[in-house]
Length: 245
Length: 195
Image 1 (cartoon, rainbow over the protein chains, first blue to last red):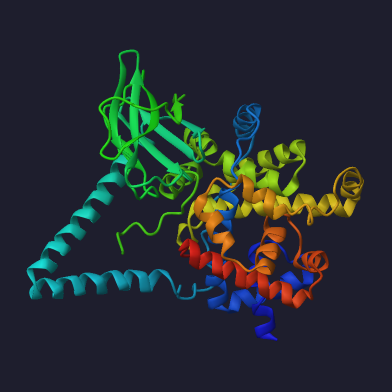
Image 2 (image 1 turned 120 degrees about the vertical axis):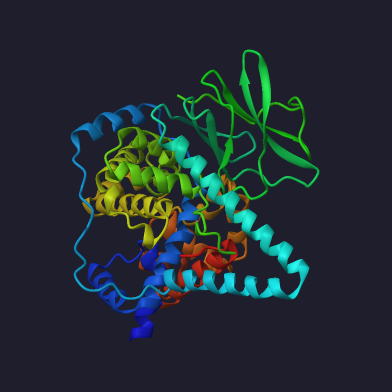
């Protein structure tokens, strides 16, 4: 029976259990079965990707209506009381533990060969860079004058920018941009009346935001496809040109 | 490779940004909510539209979802997954609720009479796939068996219950729910999703 219930996890994650009683039974099973709960979380993260793939901008008037509406909607407080001690989460801890283990392994490896030392340094630099990016992203997001824009790129994908004149930076995130052959790259441009200036190349790992400096309020942000290594001036028509508002 | 930030929720905007914005929205920051709207309105609306189909109803549901995000932002527990997943889960549930509510009130039958009622053999899957922006999702969907593929897309994009899907594809409900689970497992592994 339990096994039988367990096979409902896929349907549950997709809101596809129509029968209330059946859903309730699965939920009470879920509360006791840590493996099932983890599985449902992973399934939801997976189906969210299917959802993201269907992105389509809403009608333009909706934004103002929603923003006007929230003035009249009180926010719920966070849930503070935990009724019972939360069960050990199978994911969080091991991950932290794994990190420590990785660090220890990296440490051990350092003693062995010079190559490993280089790798360890490189890994450390990578982590430092990631942390620096996080801080830069946070500084833009929390700037009082932060503005944003989202656009669909020609050829597929979405580009979102958040820019702040006070921080002098723009955060660029992309998704679903077409993969390019190794001979080409995506290049970022800041464009104003005096012309475009390069703001760097988009890295191959596009899941992380890019922070570009010297953004000024008169700048629009564009993305073009350029030969690998980038160009001094754009050589193709921008896929998108965004004006943060 | 652990970096201290956890895997980003690959989305229309990077998960990191959405996590930040939802966190600030939870503290009543209206500017942050505005930016959150810009970041997630297209994914939310796209999914809702796909499920409910009717543009006017889709707009209403998207509005409900966005207000729900404002209202419940503080209820998102970052330990239990990225903000983008949480948002898409809310959007899907709202869309499905709306479809089922309409169907039970009979509105849907009336609408269905004017359109292709089942949309199963207009294969939803093909139309959806033609529009998918994301090469990777498309590639991963192609790795599913035909039955896994059909059951997953009918349930997720079509908003059908697994019993309805069983009717539509002419397979026993137990087989269908197993195939759905197998299909999502395969997608999860193909997309490299972590909880």
